[in-house]
Amino acid sequence: MSGKEKKKSGKESSDRGRGSISRREFTIGSIAAIGAGSTAGSIRGTAAPSQPVDESAPREVIAPPVSEAARTIKLTVNEWEYALRVEPEWVLRDVLRDQLGLLSIKDMCNGHGACGSCTVIIDGRPVLSCMTLAIECDGVTIETAEHVAAVKPELIEGYVLNHAMQCGYCTPGFVVTAKALIDRIPKPTEKDIRNALGGNICRCGTYPQHILAVREATTGEIQVEGGMD
Ligand code: FES
Ligand code: FES
Image (cartoon, rainbow, N blue to C red; front, side, top):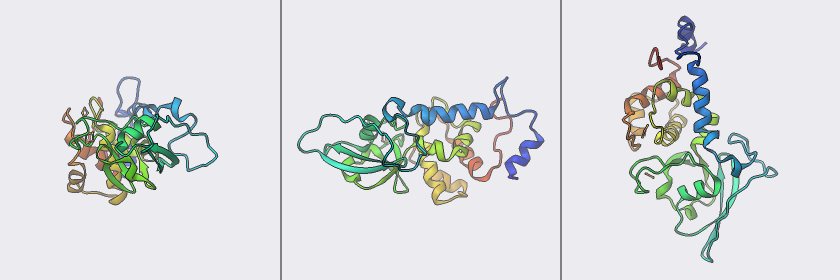
């Protein structure tokens, strides 16, 4: 039994809940909002973010008109393989959003590389997709927040239970950056977390809560008693 489970069992009656909706139920709803909910279902059809690569599965892509300068790149995105036609000047953020419908990828700085809200994981490293040309990404493996929500629910739970979002606009970028950190350092220190998340900006000022969220996700220890009460 984890430390978190032990602590919860002693204080289960509060359920860290609000009214008739428990925090866990709220968390599950939030995971859906960050993950599957922000994936354009009409574009991806039956594609599930955590499903392994399957060449026979139906995958729909919105293919915009391109010029003769366009090239084909192959990407693995959230465990799905794609071949996309891209213009030389197109940035990865726009390709992932517009062609694959991955709407968790945001833009808080007009693509100036200053906010981190467009962060995706490329071959294990957090990368600003607004500063990355899609045409240079041939052959890479990409993870977005939709996939993180599917494979790391404890991280999303940590975010919800520790109030690490207000408007939520910056949240996918933080979550993706935190996931890359945890993959590299499963038990990060506070300093590790601060260093990793230092490039992500939150206009709502939720910074201290991100430390707690990642700590709870990686240690299993409740950081904020009472939580959403
Ligand atoms: S949109 Fe701000 S860093 Fe990419
Ligand atoms: S929660 Fe609003 S910008 Fe971060």
